[in-house]
Length: 248
Image (cartoon, rainbow, N blue to C red; front, top):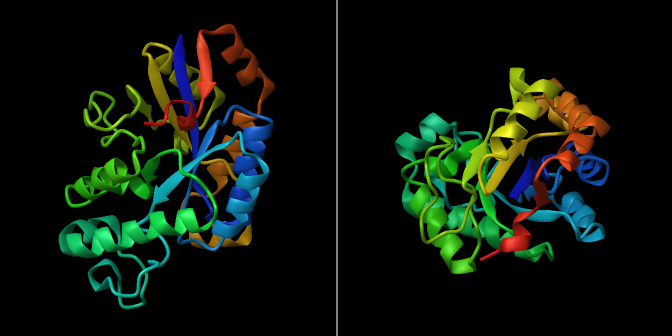
């Protein structure tokens, strides 16, 4: 039987995102989420998580969205004090600043009164050469699983860090259809453990004005809560879990 984690990224981005993720958990197939501690909806997300303890909640490490929690990380920010783009990050970010900021984000998660289930990152920045060693260091320190370092499904997780056999990121953008999700679920069923990434949300002002990925999130929400998807999963050898079921 395959153990399948369906993780909703961006918990904490805004109240609309938070409520969409919660709906996908309560009335859909989402089992897990990851929280952005630097975003305006973080405290709201934490309150929802505490009210729904069966939802696995990890840390969505951020270096490319919003502003850092630390004030002394100049290589990570643009003149407006916001995080640089991913391409700029790879060129100019100093490892010392990366570690300082990511450590602060982990500490902020604990300060919200939550216990993290695992680590992943916004825009997959933990696959960057400068960031990956720091994330693995944090994972070892806190004994946390990590989303596969590469989105390439052939890439195995670091042997010292627990992670799924397969990470599936295709339920996104033009790939947000019921047929595509079913194909992705079939891919997941071919291995022992798999994670599917998703981004369900209700569209609110903060999301519509701050993100380049908006309307497909509402479509994701509709598909992830479709009873046909839940019924299909019940007929397969798929066990829906979160990372908390096999935390290191």
